[in-house]
Image (cartoon, rainbow, N blue to C red; front, side, top):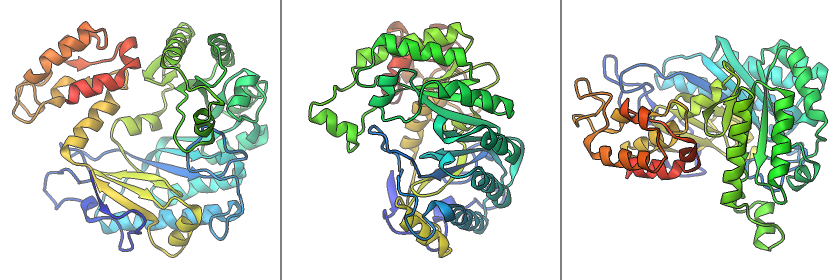
Length: 438
């Protein structure tokens, strides 16, 4: 993948030319707005709110504790800057000839979006309606910390059109929350979930395992507490200590231990067992849901939808082009308010990268991927009409056989022409991806 625009250079004249729609009657190619079969991709919107009360030691997201950064980048006028970006983005898509598509999902993330008042979050959903439109029955989610909402505010979000709220629970054990720099008390989580339910909102809880000092018993306690609360959806992520974070510096100085792969594997297996016994079904490696409550916006990323990401540092995906916004809120705001797209750069995804992404993302899902899609056009087992769709390409037959023998892929599914991870395979998804794309 080669950046076609240098990082830091705004796209003054609109979207890059690779995003443009193909001529009428032409088949959608690599960079067009549709799939290879000519069908339009569904469309989503991500809105980034960069403010946090406290920056957690493990966090490497684009977040800031300063709510007063300057014109357009401060919390009090943040929504008006988002409005400017969304208007410019819609106009740029029109200029590029992209078909108008209503958003099927909207996700407001951060940061902590609920650092803003409910009226601002409601206004942000209004901006999406104005710029793109919303599908009837669209899924609209906001992230929230348990100590950043109250009952009236959650009711106001539901009234404004939000359908889900995802709470950052992380743990039910006080010393683990302290290790993660979380500011809420465990007793707050069941209370806010109950308020959300009363407002008619779907509920999700985010958990993190592998924090320094967390025992297997601590993790089991957190899982049992989450199950007792009974949200519609649960996410469980192994702690990743990213270079440059405060926690990374503590590990480097020997003040904290690096999470152990064996410890995290044991905790993942425990999560899968306990959640399954409580009626939650895994649908992506790190996500479980009660039947009918999967997060559609999550699936947008794993199933190759298009989306526009608004806000500082947000990423977008149109056709085979990825774009990323200026990261610092002041730079982003200056560009957006001047009527320019605040895009810092873009890249075009080539065929090899597209294959890698198809496998890397698709293999994470419960339904896995069709092995026939991994063949070259015209290859036996490839995905062209009449090429034996449903069978693995010849070159992959021994690879799939080894992965089944090693217990990483489901054997019965492989015979049906699909690569579906076993529980052990979920723990080694990167190994499976490398094998299928080598």
